[in-house]
Image 1 (tube, one colour):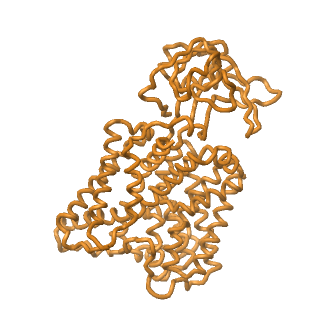
Image 2 (cartoon, chains in turn cyan, yellow):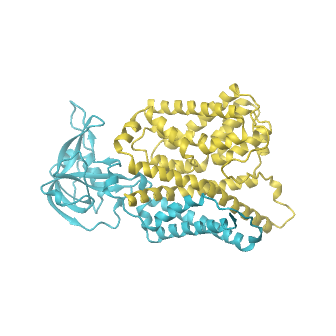
Image 3 (tube, chains in turn cyan, yellow):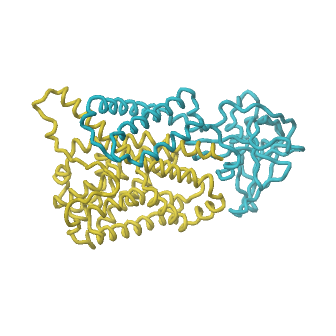
Length: 249
Length: 308
């Protein structure tokens, strides 16, 4: 069946993508998909889409007599898939899929028969002033200066994340770390240990205050031993999810 | 699960879309303003110079691997030696500013941009020289440029004379502008389908393939390269966008395998093979793909061995 519908369908698709991108940018939900440094490219894409929209409208308004009748292109269906999925306004990554992601626990590999690794910024003490929810800064500090942080009190806010390698009284207080887009998100966090932690379900958000200790962790796949920071719980409470839950290094 | 899949799928798509648009606009500009005659006239005669120059041509002509086949065909018709035209065809979709830009955004703080550029350049020259030695010059398919099953708007190479000096400057500008817009539309439609497909497959692999499998294959120096080359061949992604798909695997796969994906894909894939078969003799296409596969594998393996 030959029709003149094809340019109309393409117009609809162009409008759909323009609206989708505009909505993401205006509501700032785009930050659940992309690192902030990539957002300027989305502005560029929206501009191009608008220009193409205008061109397509011109074609349909002025040149409609020149349009041939042709069969509907099935390829248009492929374009409807992302538009359809976007209608549901997907936003959050759930716990189940996070197990497939790269996980960073602030590990340092242990080499046998060697002196403990020299800490880089040993002099700096952790005080609440330096770390205004600098989650990334805190965990990087714990990773680099573990030996001199043992015994300090640290406060971290993140979501509960569990893997099978840890025991029942342990979980990882984590954030999702985005380098370019959510597809390459990685889980970054610190191991937390305490009593009755199973009342906090996976993906719930918590504020943890704990004492820093060292924990030895063996990765069965890599056949390596690591030392990672661990927080022994002093206090822990469930909180509302943060409005900006991702960290963008 | 459904929501996670949607987020990952859409994030790859949204991230890559601007770069695909850049590529489409660049391709339209080249279609309108440049002819293959210009290329053959400006190629150095000395073979020692000609191959590297062909390898770097992409910097001036950032053309996607989709649109490069008709150009290659016109070059051969005009008498360009097979090896040289091959190097040009293979290097242009890799060593070009749009592709290297997108690669740098997909792999920040990583040597991948330099690896991709240098290995793409080197590989294209090696493959071109190999075909120069082992292929005849009669590679054009007999008869007309057969219509390929995938609809690509006939690559209308228009000579610069289309810009009529007699008409007013404004009418020339608007004529060119609407030509650019309509070429861009078609290019975008054509390429966008594969981008959506590639993002879909990539997101599905993240959500449904168990981590242990990915780690096992991804960590092995040989298996990882083979898997990534296979993926690159099947996905037929535009080279402006494939870096974003590759970067989703960056934690589980060896650098060499990611590099293989990023140079093998632009050189050959299903879509590209179909187009080549429409223009050239099957024997040449087979030799070409075989050589590309061996060279890309070897370069990627060397990268893994030297521990990047």
